[in-house]
Length: 114
Length: 113
Image (cartoon, rainbow over all chains, first blue to last red; front, side, top):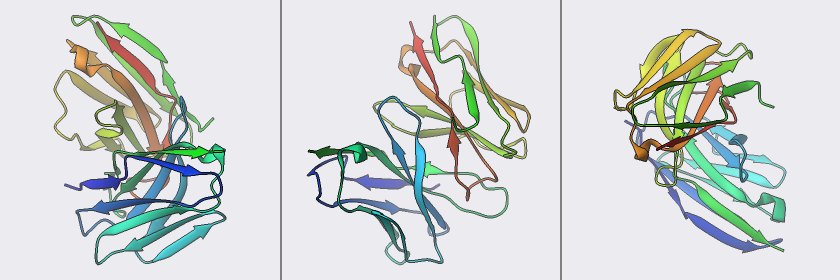
């Protein structure tokens, strides 16, 4: 089955700096890669996702890149703000048909210092 | 609110008890999931139901038994649990399995004593 590795497990940056979180996946059939943000005491919520027919996607200060050949994808947050502090999870899945195996990485705890 | 509701929010049970967790969604989704969240494995997939059929169980111990009577409801029946089963149990749903945003419930904080 799919295995998703995520690094680093913790990340501390100064406000205004950029943050990068990297994930690798094992199943070459995976073709959907979402990122979730979980604030303390709250549920995980989708912040951005990318499908395998796209190499990069951007939404304001957040961008995700995908390298299918190397089987890795990354989350980039620019101009970080204290409210970006949270745990971020990457995930990989196969879309189409009845498959429903959204597998998550172990999370990255991001701390943005003012 | 994401439209996915879990009850109860907190549960304390003894190792010999039987209890059930409930998840409900009225978003028109046809895939539902149970995840276990703990310090060791932050988001561990337990069960997936797509169109009310179980498609994944990831070798979860038999003391956890899921039930999906219809596309809007998902249960997790618990019996003879161990203290290491204490965790946050999160339910999620999506429009179809695998390639759509998963909406999570608030979770049930389970403590096994």
